[in-house]
Image 1 (tube, rainbow, N blue to C red):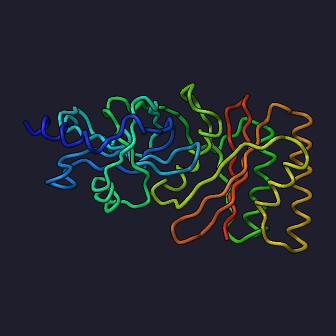
Image 2: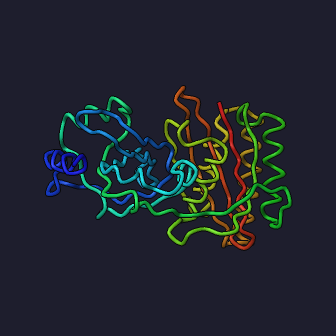
Image 3: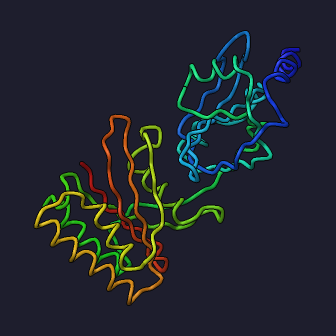
Length: 277
């Protein structure tokens, strides 16, 4: 009976004709399962997902309490994991009272109805942090990354990490995998925003990315930028298959960190060089 009443009450909540959801592909950074409002909503399940395409945080709401019969642990299986939900399994929520209740829980999320938790598809990626470097190109960049951190060049919070990626779901791009590696450093729920993108191997693109990483303007920093850029350009000439990425992310306090990364597809290794304020 409860399920029937809940379903009928939601007929006024969800507008199928006006629904304009997008495909969601991102990382689950929060999960709510339980009673949010005893009268209007009852027991609901919400996956909070930071979408990789537009960097928005979505709250995907399953209004059906069938999730209580799920034989598993939602947080253990989905939290901080990549997922994908096709837009055909999502719908807009237009009822103002429903949105008011949801926004009271988290006003920063964009809420959509999820037809069932069963449509949340896991996108696995297997990786490990490593010190045993297989790629000569990664090793050369690591040397400069350590120099940057040790001597506070371009900022005061630099450090380097290297990961070996063993496997990834075919639906994940190399940029998606890099986001996952950043999440290994800082949980997505602790981020105010994250912006990571691939860059071309052309000279101007590489030098712009290096300039963004080393934001402090002084003589030592400028000299290091030139040396760093020259190395990356030389690597591109000898290894055109290398891929480069740039990005920034910040926590809720506004502390911002810049990122420059390189992937060697042959060895499956990423090097991540961070520089903070």
